[in-house]
Length: 628
Ligand code: CAO
Image (cartoon, rainbow, N blue to C red; front, side, top):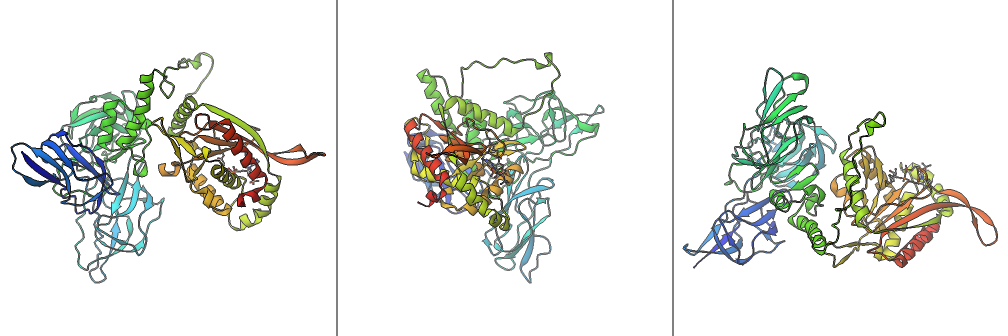
């Protein structure tokens, strides 16, 4: 019986790449090309397929290990083969996008301007991250900036190793091919910069018919043939905007959205889920807006991430990336496949991977309690089994208008339903005497103005809540989805509900217990602005332990906030008012702040809540206590 040692193949020179998943177990019988492990750099992830069929006899790496080309991954007992060592075939290569330095590269100074490479014709694409600063030494392929369209984000890599000597962009700038990112000094004089590479391929123009109805073909998908349609995102009659996703295609390594080449109305769809398509296959017919032939489609869905894996990779999926943002879903093909097999809507699963990426464990974690509840006969979380509110034709009763819900509003509606149905809520009320706090705050107003910031009661409340979470740690927990554990958090991150034109957003302020009043004031102002400008990233809204929802500026004397699960408690703040308070001898006017705390009664007992609330109200009434 021959044992074959399977090693890391050529992964494009990357060193110390993290093993994020082991896809096989000892004893598994695997076929050639089956995925053995998944590796991930901070830019890309890649499945490493087995070069041989056989039985897995040993696994030589663990999740979290760092590996490079030639490192041993597994051993396989392959019948009939001579004992040998073999490198796994190269992982499929994501799109290449090495940007070429501008032609004014000067060999005398060894400095070169770095332009934005071909990004598939996309214009005015937003810079969402500057990943380097002047003076940084970078390697070829290191991310310089990150761009984001409404469909995808893409890192623009350094075209060669060198030192950043200037940066010409800032976050929020809108850029196109050729915009200058900055200037780099080459590491070694004369080092040849890479050839400019095509990033996303431009789709062939859709063929216009006399009636302005156009057939929409599958654009250039990097030569991939027989690619499976995994989602039809539109139906006949739908109005679509230019760039809206029409269908989603998936190879075994990559998935991609195919966008509408222009705005218009879908007349018919020629494909169904499961069909296999290639470049030129007709997706359907659409009537383009303005009756003009549409502009060539751009495969915006397939921006080019940095070329990571091996050069020997298949040329298929040249214009694809191994992970796509599809709507709000950020997941790789393996995770999408698992979700399809289990019938899971990935839009409902929270991602725990880097930048909120969905992992297989997230899908399993989502499914497990649902299956457990179904097997125990209990109603399944999320309100399944609850009678639906019947549909009503309101037009029968008077004039109506149909207003489209924003994506944020829809997500909020789902979250509220999920939290209201899953969390057994209890709400307690109390008034905090903020007379002294307000005297202190008013006294600081001039200083705040000098600093260019606005000091409201909110940073005081954040500080007080952080202290209360430390004093009563039963509030700083989450229920683990295995139903067997409580997750006790040793950090204090607090979300603040922000009312934005798009709907309710809850950005999270980190390590509140370690920050001072001014730092918190600046952070609240900055993050609330970011939320209102629609610029929050998923990471800005993750990791909260507790939430504050303040309607103090609007009015009202109390409300029941809904717990923002998996957090277990939330503070509702209403409008402060001067009220007569009995001090034992007489009624005195005091500035009273109505507060309500809702909590998950599965995690928190009434006595815990009583202690937490008493501490909180006392800390607000005398903010000197926050120094204790
Ligand atoms: N009582 C009386 N006045 C209050 C108050 C309270 N509880 N809280 C704030 N105020 C005052 C502030 O002091 C400020 O007045 P001055 O300018 O005179 O100082 C004014 O109200 C406006 O405050 P603000 O809203 O600009 O700032 P904030 O720090 O209180 O709140 C933020 C910031 C982001 C939380 C808020 O703007 C917001 O979006 N609130 C809505 C949250 C929400 O929608 N919650 C419901 C979620 S569930 O549907």
